[in-house]
Amino acid sequence: MEAFLLEHQPITSDLREMPISTLAWIGDCVFDLHVRMALAEKQSACNSGDLHRAAVKIVSAAAQAEALSKLMPLLGQEETALIRRARNHDPGSLPRHADPLQYRHATALEALIGYHYLAHNRERLTELMNVILSDKTS
Image (tube, rainbow, N blue to C red; front, side):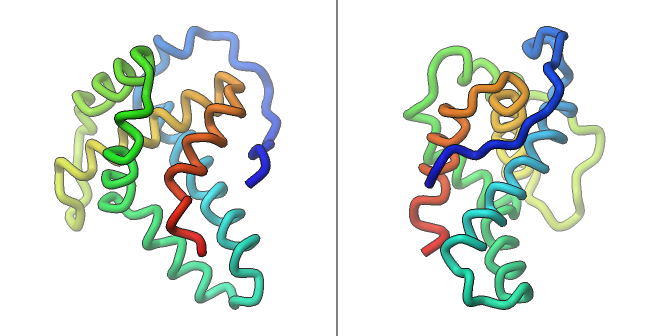
């Protein structure tokens, strides 16, 4: 898949100081959009209902936690430190339907995606998303 390009205004603050909840909030949106684009490309003959059901399977907390475990061996020190910080972040409240550990891991994945997106690390973001989606969009 080609690089995922979605332009935004430069972020002037130090992203390492940005709250995890903000990074995850951005990462959630970017992750969801990337999944939708990949599904639309690979399954263009499907209707929107089928695409939505396929996307939900990939963006669920359980699937995101699984994706994070798949990525962990590929992450550098700075990325691992961000993941650790995000997993330890107190979300305040947890969704009733999500396992707390899976939810923390999903938040960590979203924070990583948000960090790379805001840092304009397009190549790395695309590389990570390709690993996550390698067996999910066929």
